[in-house]
Image 1 (cartoon, rainbow, N blue to C red):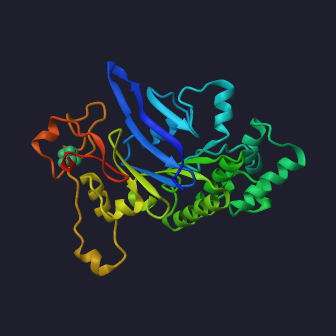
Image 2: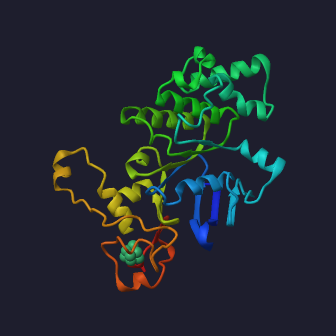
Length: 319
Ligand code: SF4
């Protein structure tokens, strides 16, 4: 059976007007689709626009241009009751489990917020729903009456996940959900995401700043640089045969567990910093750091094209 997209993003732009009449093109012409039940990893360095993309897709930000289709429905400019209805289908888990939970509310009430907003249940049924959610994310019934400061970072992220699940969404945008956690806890939270996906048939957009973090969870991966997608393909293809020089350099930074291979491995150290997004380079946005840059890279922006089945790249090396 052909894979069925639950989310399609077409030429999506989110620009911000900043001081001095300048425009920050935080998200610039994104095109990708996410199939039902899969995990799409969206990766890039800090400031590349990946979080803005997530927030625009869930409609925390109004898109500047382009289209967002969810389940075939155009949700790009939904407002009022229609937007509220859509919010039941898509929820967000935030990066910082310390800042995203209201410190004055009990965990039970934090988790029940969405249930109350959407009037999904009340009284004993509401309570049972909250307790079941706590159990589903690996916490206990007695945690419902406690406050966020009584929990570790990993536990707080479990509470954030339970809150997102409370209204039974089909789609979750997880914005760097493991970046603020200890390395030892990161794998546990990734495993929880995987378990919940299997049990509930969820679809994820999983945002991270390095490819190592999305490796074990993503079916497909998109790599962003300066507001643009520069490579999108299946996880298997990306790790086995990365095409864009930026992806190649990101992958070369991931340590390999086999000491023999690790010793022989070539690391590519990128020169310089990510350019100022208010003043991006001409032509290819990566050209100021690209080890393979050619004269034409400064003149012409490479098109984002399918260079082999289900493998999209924006680089002059491939056409
Ligand atoms: Fe490098 Fe040119 Fe490809 Fe950009 S278009 S990634 S500068 S080779």
